[in-house]
Image (cartoon, rainbow, N blue to C red; front, top):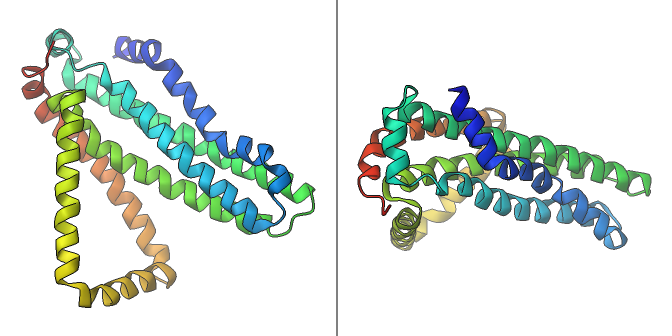
Length: 240
């Protein structure tokens, strides 16, 4: 197992360390546009928009750490090793989760430093802006984990290229299906949206969000089991 950890570190250490750079992106953006930040609203907009950009960058980097393992030779080798492909996949999932935690810790420190710098300049409302930025970063981190829980099984079942195409087809089909349902049930959309907003803004929000976060973590664990079941089938279909 230590050999697999060392292999992943040597192969993907720059991707792992890049999480610190991505997490620092809001601070760099706020420093660059410091002259245009005059109040808490400008600060919140800067932090949230840069957090979305960092979110997209981390997603692409995280997928790069699984893109090079769709090879038959490696699949046969790791399947016959003492750790087995289950141990290999577990290390992959743990590494991506650790990357997300590193990103989340860094971006929260970056948000805090950005708000502290704004407060030193006399801008009011930085505490509220910091709380909003931290909440946004937390939500984006769990969305990222959910996306990886969906992406990784496709990569190891069909390979990086085919998996992306098949995933996109499934996603587009789902969007079309949901659009059709919304059109047919358009009269009920206002009722559903009002109930969702009431749940998020009401007393249930303190209970609802932890439940959603736990469900995302459970989906990530289930994704590992699914990938383990699909891995050997995928190895036989890899191009090389």
